[in-house]
Amino acid sequence: MTTHHSVELLFRFAAYVMFGLTLETLFSIHGIEVCLGMKTPLHRRMPKRYLEGFVSAYMIPLHGLGMLFLFEPACQALAPLHWTLRFVVWALAITGAEVAWGWILRRTVGFYPWDYYKESRFRIFREGYTLWTLVPLWGTAGLVMEWYSGLVRHLSPSVAAYVLG
Image (cartoon, rainbow, N blue to C red; front, side, top):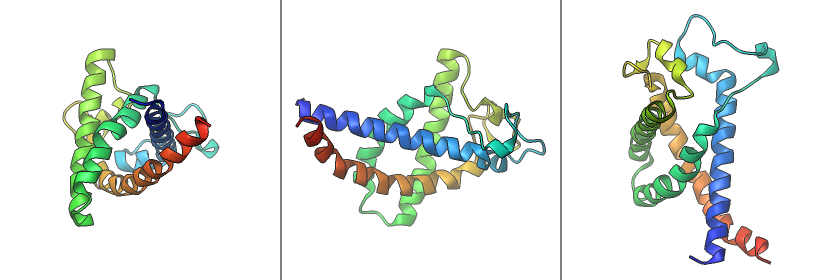
């Protein structure tokens, strides 16, 4: 692997992590309570008017490595399909990735960062690794990430050339 290629991969990894954590933060401000369908809001450290969001560093490998080595190749393979079919594939695939990552984290570190899902009536599996209400959002997220991934892959050679002088 060349230095140029390594810089491209590092740039794409960082871009995917920042994008994923930013979306998680914004969604956690209000959207997650809607998807949870809970009568009582989530416990927050600060009043809601502060727009405090939350993410976990445990999500960095999923956002970075998952996008690089799973999403990018799948995106290229699915490109010829109609957007509605890609939406369904992304909804199922990202839901599956959330369940798998939650299961892995629970087995290795003893919890997963979104374990409050198990309080929702919309939970999938007893442990609530994901929510039924998130499935269509994951399909939408997949279509948005197709565009973002294309942008990041397009920019990565220029970024590597700039970094390497």
